[in-house]
Image 1 (cartoon, rainbow, N blue to C red):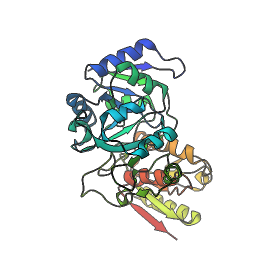
Image 2: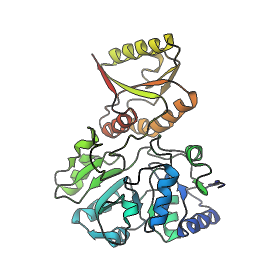
Image 3: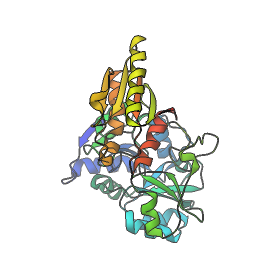
Image 4: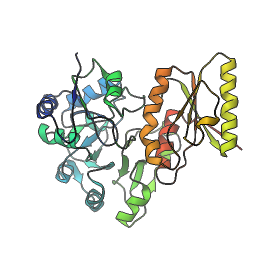
Length: 351
């Protein structure tokens, strides 16, 4: 299969490319497209055969649910078996935007899309190309990240092409994404809403809107491999670079000293080490490759650069990566969730 890449300017959308993409979606095919979080791999959410193509192209386990993307709130109501009152409040506050809501599905949504679950995850992306594609296709679009399953999510069209060239017919190139980590996923099927995946929309922001307690699923921190995932990313290792990744946390000077010791050991063994540092610490490391993820005072930049840096280390062919911890005040939990997944929960605490 030949994969075509079409440029899509957000302020001046190419109508011909949009119609081409919409036709592919309507015919049951796959299209990669930009959202504000990461690039998505889209197909008609209400066609089982189309959903199966997503799993095949990504090499994704079939019990890992897909997120359905809509362009109007009414489209959520049309596929929900029961819509809790919280859904409308949250949509008014955060849609379009990086919040995914999990609700009970009705019979319109095939189990091929929900990974066999009786629930469906739905969001409205805050990106003009994504919204235009949903409207033009006339379809609800199921779209996980447009990468090979388990690898770092794509934040540029080039990342999509690297993973899926020859596997999908079309990539809409809308440039680099704005946020860089996937949406917050909130389960509304229980009395107390529960965050299944942290993201840009925080627990505190949701509680302020709902004026009630919101819980965080313990599987976000611990190992949830023994249970069926209620949302993407809960069960399987995700976002992983080729090299082994280890997180090192503790007091700054101790972290730098330990990472330098570990990198020196690898060098003596003839192996290459990479370090994920910050603007403040980059010059204090001694390793084969040291890359800054941004300033600690700019956590949005840290989130935006994370997956790109993990992919850069793939290109550098390092054997091991050491990363500082990023317990930033607002979305540090979401950033660390991705890093912990990428590292397979390997973390070293130093004093």
